[in-house]
Image 1 (cartoon, rainbow, N blue to C red):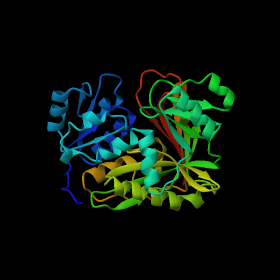
Image 2: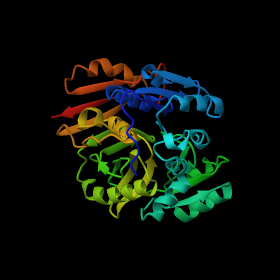
Image 3: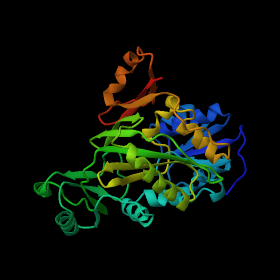
Image 4: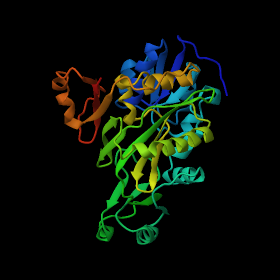
Length: 355
């Protein structure tokens, strides 16, 4: 598939108003595009750098129609944009294909989709009642984690079971879930893929990731020797996912590096937190390359621009440390402009390079 080139001076629509949309709009401006955003009322930090911004509900069909009428191409910045809202956008304007959202918004559907392509997820079972929850724990065992099928993010909608005793304190939340068994792993890592309108696929170096409480704390490239043997196989799966979804733009898959090979964790059909290091650490950032892809431009090189890069999220009040971090000439600070530095909230990030 090769669509028309969206020329500089055109308008890119972004569904969602968070920091990913903010960084995407900044990259688009550098290439000569204007961006307009759309999201329900709230602290939409992307609005600070957009030419225009619609603050309307996801079910507001007239507002979505007005938004789309101003756009030459439309994309999204997070995977929980309701599919019903995306389907109100004329399909010829949309990249990636909305089917990527349909798959990624349901953890159970996502796991089955990846299994169908030959991927290996952690042991899992669908859970739709308290009795099914207990049966899943009995069959798969503990430790494990109960996750809502939809909308959980950064540790939300997740309940960890360290042992069978935790069954007394964790209850089925009354909505469809999936129970996942614990997978012993040596490291966590991402595959960050870029696919153009013509089907060309490129990869950035895979970062090794460290999480705490379900929140990404740090991503480093090059990854350690725990990760390197698994990257090729993980990339082959990511390629299959992108091609099966006729995907255009940046797509991220997260994996566990285990003794039995890479185990699929989850996918994100968008630019991703573990790829923030690419802004300074790669020849072309994930944000610029996403814009290039959806606009039909030549894809930028994904090679590393430094010997080593490490991105650390600034969580909550850690943002107040950002001025002192700037005293290190190797550090690059990004502050997202959020007003409330509450616990667990990503307020910015810092990337440290070694050249």
